[in-house]
Image 1 (cartoon, rainbow, N blue to C red):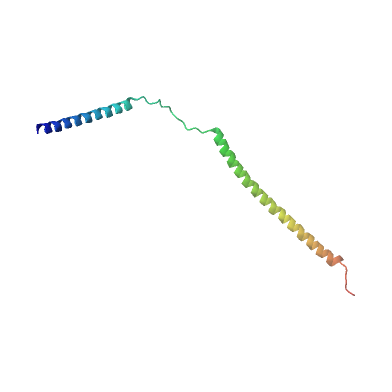
Image 2 (image 1 turned 30 degrees about the vertical axis):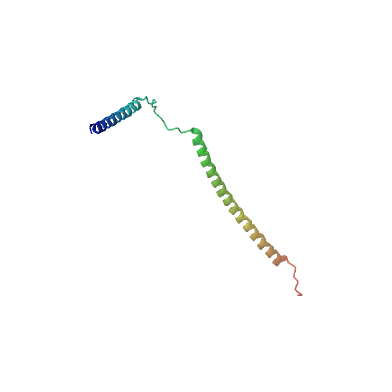
Length: 109
């Protein structure tokens, strides 16, 4: 019976020792992690590349230029269309007037 108690006590003792060792190892690892030198920190600034800004502005200007080109083209086409329509009407009215005034008369009078 004493041997069983002794074995039980011995097992408990070993278990406590193992737990102590684990704690020591964990503490050592934590200390190493804490004492580990960290890289030096520098003041950082946002990098705004002039090239990126210029590319962005160039793209923006190209889009605006395309839009304005289309608007100017449409306005010019409408303007020219009005002038052509006016010219066709004037020529048509003149032709009808010419036919009425100077056209051959096919009547038998």
